[in-house]
Length: 239
Image 1 (cartoon, rainbow, N blue to C red):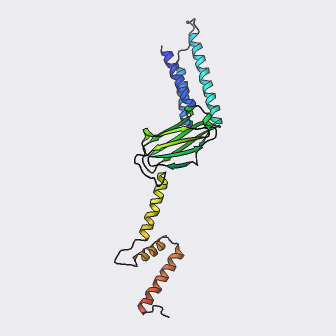
Image 2 (tube, one colour; image 1 turned 120 degrees about the horizontal axis):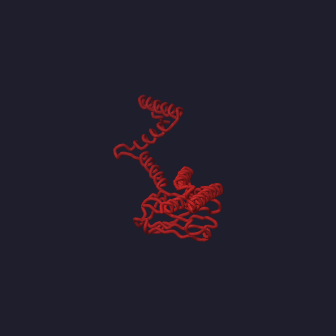
Image 3 (tube, one colour; image 1 turned 180 degrees about the vertical axis):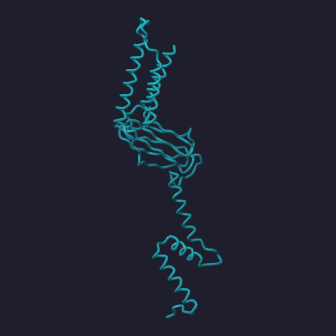
């Protein structure tokens, strides 16, 4: 009975090793397979049945075949991050379009999409010798259980259900954050107290000084000093 359970464990670990992508994970799984095989009882001289020896020999052969198959698979399948895709939106949803020629001919289990509150990921396994992956951190929240995907002949369409109806300014959190930083900087530069009309210009000059190189800083300092000297002499440059 223990031998049967051990062989079931070996079979499960071998299946996991075949689908694992990380080299360290594969190595750990294969090491555990070998450890379990070593725990199987060897045939003794008093045991006239060769069943135990035959079982262990068969298991060892299976493990070797699985390891060889895994290595062969690894030598042919490469990770390929998806770098381009399209998207559009409606009030309640966002649609992502990923073009992958031939994806419609794959078994359905080789196309996986995982949804989370603020992200989604796509994995297309072993398409034209590559594992195609896409992971997106979203700029707004979605409802994972209402989000879906469809596999078409040459593309995968992912539909994200918005947590709050409305228009998204950007799809990704990175794009949204970058735009917000730009707007914040522009607002700071143009900020002018109502009692000082020249404050906006002063803010702009200060930013130029802070962001400028040494030459820029020297030129701004020189211009400021000359301006102050002219004001002290009452020279306003009248024609």
